[in-house]
Image 1 (cartoon, helix red, strand yellow):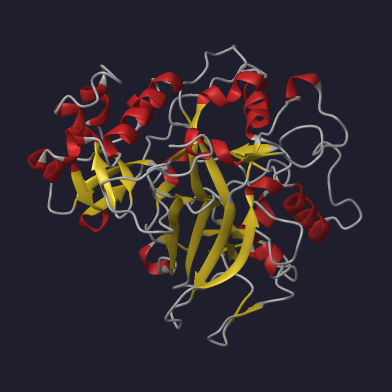
Image 2 (cartoon, helix red, strand yellow):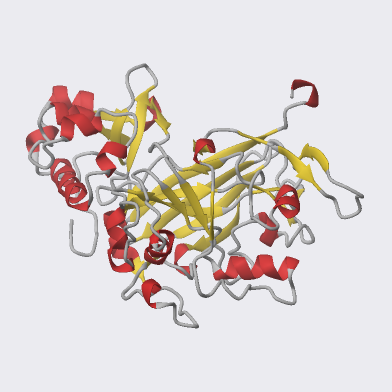
Length: 429
């Protein structure tokens, strides 16, 4: 690979424009549809390289003596705990083994048959065992938009520009892409009602986010300084923090989201490493006022990740793009999120996920939620089928996609997909 991140040639066929060239190699967990144990793999083109098979054959021993133990697992956690020096050795060795002129794996037909698996022949599973999930609120555009709807006289609360606001989510309901999402029940309080009722959420929404996957954690009472924060992050997944806006409106004061968000959070199956994203670091938006010293960072700590959301109703044959945004718009960067999260002594753990919060851009076509796109239901989207959507309907499928664009190559995340199922009938509750 060149210093600019341009992909070198691989003996595995990778089509032009593929999300998974040899410069990407995102990590995930897969299980063959035909049967077998779940194990660690990396995506390359339309295939998966089975790292458990490579480790068993001794091809990763020099890079990682622990290899046989960490790749024959049903989660990435054991590998994530090893830290960046180990990750970089493995990444370099995988890129070497996949290079067109390296014969070790290329010319071993028996091993190649075992270790190279077609993506369409496997089930992709949740990549990490998630201990804790924290969701930030790092987009100034999103925070301002939401504030404008509910507090037009004071859209951005005074503390927002001084600290990365967040809430603690529910890790048990994090699901992998493709898992259906059931419309939840909760207490709602319509504007014209005398009191609350218990009913299925009507105002169901998506949130376009990234999720940072934690590698090595920190000890209790040992805050992580901003300058060292990225050493604790393995990479990013796409993340959809599904939200029931009518439930949220009634319950969020004074303590924030609860049932409105704990019913499901969907993540993509592939974790794109920070090393693969390194060529796409860029400057983040300017900050006024300057953060307190523990939140000050230097250098380019934003990521130029293109993001889009597609929507498909049950009446549509194909999905349609309804918004496009970019992670570079985030006001608070990942290092600041981690520094703030741990500043009071909180200990992050391997496999934790830190969501960015909804990523909205500065224009009407770059908003990261239906709440904003349809502006609280007052400007419903008109779809090619003629249907209108202010919020999600039963049978609707939401697809998140993300990628970085290089000179003739792409570093992609794949998809983060979920379909809304109708609520459980009252008689079944």
